[in-house]
Structure formats: C-alpha cells, structure tokens
Length: 518
Image 1: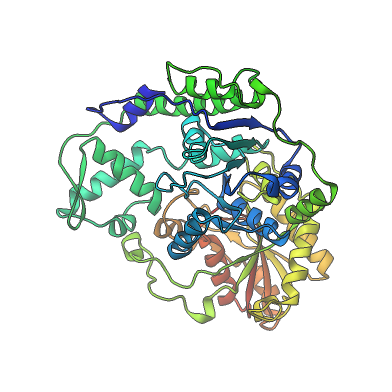
Image 2 (image 1 turned 90 degrees about the horizontal axis):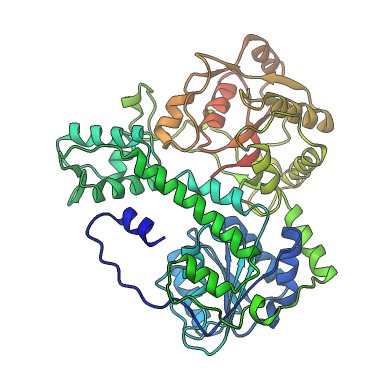
C-alpha cells in the first residue's frame, strides 16, 4: 500500500510513519438486505448514536436523498457534497462542530481539513473503495474523545459504484498525447478553460491529467495557465496497469474487511502496512456486536417510498459551447428560441439509491438489450403524470402543454429498450408513436466523458428527420412532441435531435430520458 502511494506521488518522497491503531474507535459492520433496510436502520437508530457525527455516502445523490429522508422523519441533519454552496458548507461544518445538528450526510467532499475532536460517530452508507479512504473518514471520529462509534452499512451495489467512478481518473495515452500536442503548438501558456475547448476531455479529468503530466515533468503551471516543458514524455502503460491493479486490490481489501472474523482495527491497519497492528478488543468481532440490527417496519416502509420516488428535471442546453468553429460546426452564442428544447424529465440518475441500481444494471458493459420492464415503464408513466400536474415553477409539461405525439432517438446499443419505452408511453398516454429520427453519416461518434464541444461535434448533423417522420410532424400542425431516449450524459444528442424536430415543425420538444449519467 505504501509503495503504491509513493509510486503515484513520484520520485523523492520521504515516508514518515506513525502508529495507525485508534483506541477510541469501536468498529463494526452490519450487512442488511438492501438500500431499503439500510435507510430504514438509519431512521430507526440514528437518534441513539452518541453525540453528533457524519454519515458518509458514495454519491452526491445518495447524500441528498438520505438527508431529505432523515429530515422528513424529524432528524436534524444536513447534506454536504461537492454541489453544496461554499457558504452553506461552512455553515454546516460550524453547526456540526457546535453540536447543533445530529449529523452531516456527506460525500468525500467533507475532507481532511475538517476537525471536530469530539465527533461521536461515523456511519458509512456504502463502503469506500479503499482502506486509505475508509481509514481517513473513520479517523474523523474520536480524536479528542474516549469513545466513538464507527459503523459500516455496505451495499451490494458498492462495487458497481466504485467502478463507475474509477474510469474517470486514469489518464489514457491518446488523451495525454492530445494535451501535450496542443500545448506544444500553442507557443504560450493556455488556461484550463482554453485547453478544454481544444481537447476531448471534461474539466475534472483534464485537471487530473495535467497534474499527472506535471508530476512527470512534461508540463508546468505558470501565470497564464499551463505550458509544455518540451521534455519528452512516454506513456508508462506498465505503471498505470499496476495502479489499476492496485485499485482492484484495494476494493478487494474492503470486501474482505466486511467479511473478516478477526479484529477489524487490526485488519485495516495491517492492510495499511502498520507493523504495530494488533487486536483492539473493542470492535464487533473482538467484543461482540455493539449495535442493534433491527429495522422498524414503519421506517423500512418510509425508506421504500423514498427509493421508489422517480423523476428529476432535465435542464435544456441554452448556449452552444465556445470554439465550435475549430471543429467545423458553425454555431456560437445562445441557442435560438425556436430551436430550444423545453425542460424535460429523467427517471433517475445512475448514481441514485433507488432506480439508479436498476439503471446501472441496464447500462452495464455487456448488458443485453431488452424491452423495458413493466415496473420501469410504470415509473416513467408516474413521472409523466407528476410532470403534467406542474409544480411551483411552472404549469404542467414545463408550461408547454400536453405533447401530441411521441418520437424516439435511435439507439445503436439499446434499440429494443428505447422503442419499447416510446411505444409503451404512447400506448398508455393514447398518443401516436411517430417513429424515430434517422442516423446520418454513420450516426453519433465518440462516447461518454468527452467535453462539451467535442460531444456536440460528434452528433452534429448526424440525427435527421426522415421523410415519413417529417410528414407525420407536419400533420400535427405545430403541436408538441415527447422525445424519448435511454441515457442523458452531455445532453447534446437530445439538443441536436430537438433542434431538428423544431426545424421540421414541432411546436415544442419535451425530453423524457431513463437515466442521467452525470
């Protein structure tokens, strides 16, 4: 473990070690059947946990949904994620330090800078992907107190979520070469924003890649951003393969931690190469289970209702990305009002606790294409029903009126799924299904994860309204269309498809998507 970290940091690292065992911590693991029972356990027992503490989740949506559920049940908690406004984060931290809230429901955004010596407990709703991450988070508790409780509630979906996030952080040879070429040809420093417009990488992966290249001496940060050092750089495939392997080993270590019959503190500190690792005498394996395992039926029912909730707003793109002319696409500035999508709806995010699990399974690599499951179709119908009723921001259907027909976006990976969803909704809603747009020039290019400009270039003029669909649209006399797709990531596929439909005569285009990837 230490060697792996030293290798990732680069040459010239001095490692100073201290003893990792914490006598104040009482560790435990409680395996429950599913997310319903885990949330139900929190509802049942959070009030009995000592003092105030932190509930860690693996995703932003899980933190927000869990905090909402607990708050609605009367628990004094706040969510704390990377999406939380900085001022609200500061306020939440202070409230926790002052014991004015029972817990913060947080992602790893609540990091090493936070210090509350008397933190009474840490609960993990889902296991972190590595012993290092786990130890850092449990170590927030019991720093200045004689006793603190640490409980892990692992989920069957944890490994899927680990894998989902792991793919973004490893540099590829192709992306690294593209960044170095752009910097070399620029002749002067480029900001991260300027670089993002020139290479097919989103901001966060680009920043991670630049840090890797800086450690390797290939680029350096200067006043105007980043510039090439001119030093030759070779993609160390062997090294990155070792790092990827190490991450899998770390994930395996967390699974073993959950199943071990030995001392949990001894196991976790030994995995972190602490030569002084020894049995703590306090964890559930050393001293017996110290936490209740029951889940109140009413709490489980309330959790189940939260997990069955479906439907999120899908905001339309309002502006074209900058730098599109460099990619051969002649658009810039705001999208014209008569080419805009309306606000849409998505069933759930892939990272959600409820429907997110079913969607991750549906879109997993190698998963077979199949028609939409009846339960998922009914959930989409419920989303449409609530959408039609309106909310505090607008009247029903985002203020556009009920759509008159259904159109789908053609899918090369999930054609049966998308068409069956579109036809199912059309049948239940008593609307005609007009068919799908057509693919042109081979259809969209590129995959998930690229930056906005490249994603738009990859779908531009590759989705068109065919003659038959055009005639069907004309017969509607400018009424609205419900546009169905399987997955929203950058939202440019939906934007380009909606633009084509608006140009062909659709009065409004309201998107409905099964899953949101980001």
